Length: 444
Ligand code: GLU
Image 1: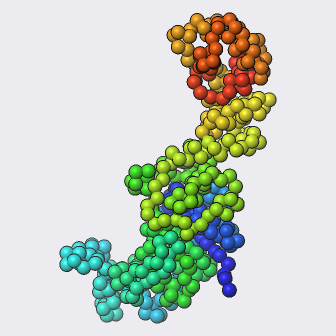
Image 2 (image 1 turned 30 degrees about the vertical axis):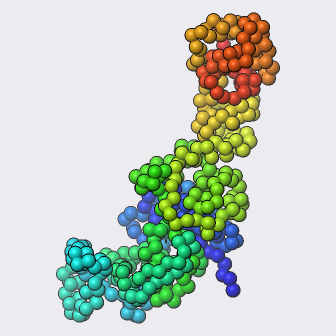
Image 3 (image 1 turned 180 degrees about the horizontal axis):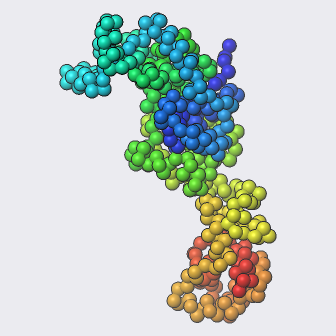
C-alpha cells in the first residue's frame, strides 16, 4: 500500500533563486529520486503583480544547470478554479469567515493583547458580525478577507528533521486564505495542490513550521491526505549572521558566473547541516545514494561560500579535455595545444575563469619576477635557453646547462628561473610548462 513518493519544489517566481532555495529543491529532488518517485516543479505564481515570467525562466535555467530535472511543471495561476472550489467547500462547512479589520485596526488589537501579556492572536471579532453589519462594512470598505477557522486543539506531526512537533492552534491566528481583492493566497493554494497532486513528502524551510500546522488542519478539513513534513534549518553566513544580506551574492546565477560548478554546490548542499561529511561527488547517482534526510539537524546551518571554490577546483581536476574543450578554446588556446594546455593547467586552477590568464601567460609571457641578486644569473641563463621548439626535454637540458655554467643547483637554480619565466613562485611542473612557452618564443 506504500504510495509512490511524490515531492515538489515550489518557488514563487518573484526573484532569482539562491542557495537557500537550492537546499529545498535538492532535498525534495533527492528524496523523489531515491524512492524512484516523481519530482514536480510547482510555480507558486498566485501573486500576479510580483510574479514575473523572467524569474520562471531563470528558475528553470538554474535547476537545469544543476541537473535537477523535474518530471512535470505545475502552475498555480492555472489552477484558480480548484482553489475557488476548495474555498467554497470551506464556506459550506463553516470553516471560513469574512473579516473586515484594516491593518491598522489589527495592529492596535495586537498591541493591546501584548500589553495585557496575551499572545497576539486574532480575536475572531468578525465571526460575531450579523449579515447586516457585514453588508454595511462591505459597502464601506469593500470585500473582506477570508479567514480559515482553526480548531483550537494541538496540531502534531513527526517532523523528518525537527522530530515530534506539537503546536497549540490556540496560539495561532486564523490564517487569511483569500485577500480582500480576491487573491487566493499560497497557504490555501499549496494545500489544494499537495492534495490534488498526491504529494507524499514536503521538505521546506523551518520558517514554514506554523504554516504547516495550519495547512494540516485545512487538509484535514478538505479531506486530503497529509504528507510527511520535514523542515530544514535556516542557512546563515559563516559567523552565524543572517544570510539574507548576502542573498544577492549567493543567487545561483551569480555563483554560476563566478565559475562555481554544479557538483561543488550539490556536494556541499546535500551534506551541509547533516552529520555526514561533505565529500565531492561527481555523479548524481552517488548523491542520491548518499542522501538521508534523517541525518540533518535542527540547528542553524552555517554556509561559507568560500568552501565552494576548493570543491570546484577538485571537481575540475576530474575533468578531461573533452569536458572543457569549449572553455579551453574560448580562452584562446589553439586546438593543437589544447591537450597539453589542459594537462598543464587543470591542477592549477580554481575555476575555468583561470584558463584565460594562464593562456595569456603562455602566449604573451608573464611579467618576470627577478630578485636583484639574481639579475646576472638570469641574464646568463637566458643566453643558454635552447632554440624553439620546446619539448618535454627542454627544461632538463636547459637547467643542466645553466647548472654547469653557473654552479647553482637545487632551489637556488630552479626557483629564480621559474619566477623569471612565469612571474610566480608556484605553478605547474616547469618541464611540462616549457613546451607551451614555445608560443612566446615563436612569436619572438
Ligand atoms: N512558494 C512557497 C515558498 O517559496 C513554497 C513553500 C512550500 O514549499 O510549501 O516559500
